[in-house]
Image 1: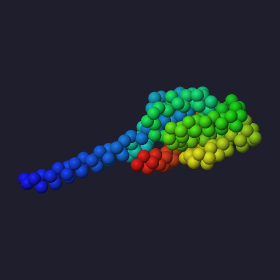
Image 2: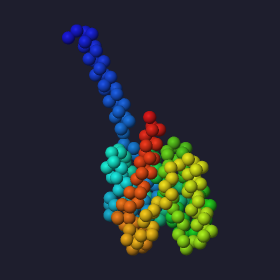
Image 3: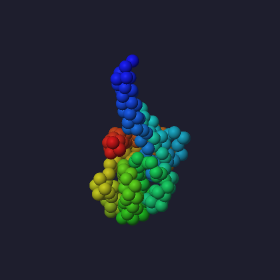
Image 4: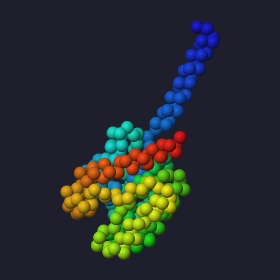
Length: 216
């Protein structure tokens, strides 16, 4: 083999290795964190039946290389989420699904305070260049129309202000279906989580696509 031929072969191999490394870097696992309350934590559900685990499985089944850490804490309000956001969302996180506010509404916390807390969480994450997918909630009817108007509007307002991906109602398709809920009438059962994941998946897929595009 002549020197020129050997050099050519070496260049081809090196070129292939270089672009193989680039492809491998592009194909790294997208790391998401589900920051929320019992709806995220899978209250009273068997391991693997919670929302983060089932969403991760559904996205992987579609060919997306993603891992979703469950940072849901039952009973958490937006204030509690704010107090732990820095350690619940570790370095290396590519995106956060933010789902908080339901317990604020149940406790009658003024929507203005909830919005202030959510905005602080979003700001903290933006300072770290971590994109947010905001999952909205709706106020329970017993809180009255005035409370509901203020509470229900804040998620879209925050999404518009910070240009976030918004999923308007986390319990969409489940909230009014007793057969998809636990006996408490508030939390989803495994079948309810399946419905939530099915409806949430297109928004999550778009969110992940935005993250992947921004990483290139």
